[in-house]
Image (cartoon, rainbow over all chains, first blue to last red; front, side, top):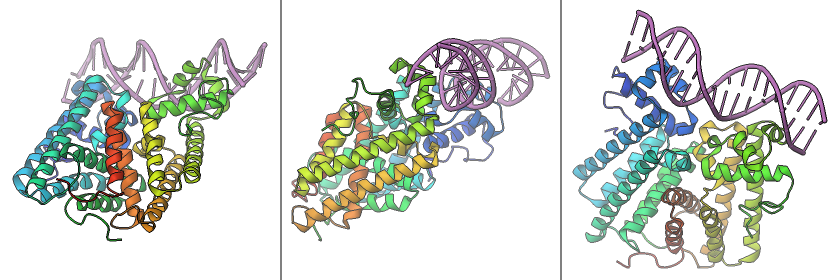
Length: 206
Length: 206
DNA sequence: GTCTATAACGAGATAGAC
DNA sequence: GTCTATCTCGTTATAGAC
């Protein structure tokens, strides 16, 4: 289950060009940002011309919209898969964190975290999609937190929505920092601490 | 004390051109990213030509190095000011968070958080400066945490260094998300929760 | 669906006058 | 220290042949 980064047709296999363009562009946005690559970059990587890219995505904004749409759909599918696979709230959260860890191990940022950094430079439809991605994640997390609190497996102060904000922000920011250090383990350690703070050993152990 | 964003000579007052260039460029990086503005953007804003900018900063990389150097120096000075002003660990942390909140209220990201997102596209000297900024922040935070744990005002599991990582990541990420929403209050609420988790009311209040 | 060719513009950068 | 002028290259995008 590599729903966050693999292509529908196999990441580097012989899929149609449209999917290969999206795969390459997605990786480039996650590594370098939307303003950090060009049609020439993608074209060279795929061994096609820029004109071919424009055939599939008339403008860079159109490409960006397609990217975030596909990413959000896959992310939503991944969340549904977690819901279907892991009944326990703690297991759901751990699986959620693993989605991020897997992206980071490939040297990538969360696509929407990267776009959030570049937010001011984005076209309105892309901005909107970023916000929707964030909201979707927060509401899913809040649901898991409420489940955990209800069954006694999680404890936290404040609302589930507020705690969901903390988790999402903490994961995105820790990912950002850990990627600069080139140290995915740093992310995993901090994420584990974040979850541990919800699922039991609260307070000091000095 | 606006050490994070004001210029030495007054942000928009009549300072020398070099400082005005740095002020404008700093704001542009924090709002749009290093790859999200050009010499033309800065020149137009200041009412000078691109050539004048190149006189002060021969290359965009040189401008970037000057930016992060000045930012890091000011940030370091702000941390020293906090150490001198607030003897209590809790007050130090609150003042630290306020540094970030002030930046966000201006619609900006932390300069180094933004550069961390663009890390892969940066010149080596700028990358190095980003890492040093992050390390400096983490070690300062770890010192405050150790002080708080020693005097009994703070409780946390794991090492002070690990907890410092969590705080820095949490602040940067929450800032990223809150800025996209255009909602600084969201940042302040999450940051307050983050601090509250250290300074007392641990565990559930269901 | 992909190519060649090119347009139109912007970016980073330099030379040399004032 | 700032200007005009220019250079070179990259970027997005289009036209039209195959």
